[in-house]
Each structure stands twice: as structure tokens, then as C-alpha cells.
Image (cartoon, rainbow, N blue to C red; front, side, top):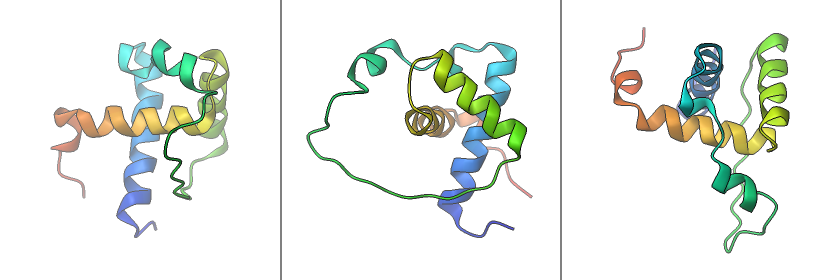
Length: 96
């Protein structure tokens, strides 16, 4: 069981992103303006390593989505986290 709240949120965001892909919601799409800047260096590079578990089909679906949207898996998951946290309908739901 995952006890780290950051890892838990990243995992939930990734799963939420996969459900958004299945329903073809706009939030699941990686923004075009980010694609054009994905290869450029950031002014301040900060790295945070987060490990979380997903089953193989979920990882594969995320990797396929990143390829289709011409971005990296890391940036796609970052996008998924921002979308997840910005959605009060999702984050306001109590978790068991």
C-alpha cells in the first residue's frame, strides 16, 4: 500500500488521465504550447523523483498517449497531475 501522499496523488492523477483518455475529454490532451517548448531548457531545472505503481496495461496506455501527443511520459504525467489538482470535482471527493 502506498503511504506517501505525493506518490498517491501522482498515481490517482495518472489513473484519472487514463479515464479522461477513454472518454476523449479535452483535459487529457497535452497542450500544444507545451509541445513546442518540451525540448527547450527551463530557466530553473528542478527534479523530483516519484515512484508509483500502475499495472502494465496502464503504463502502456500512458506511454502510447505520450507518443501520440508527441511528448515525454514525464511531461504527460506532470500534465495529468496539474489537471487532476485543478479539478475540484475530483479532488473534493473523500477517499476511503
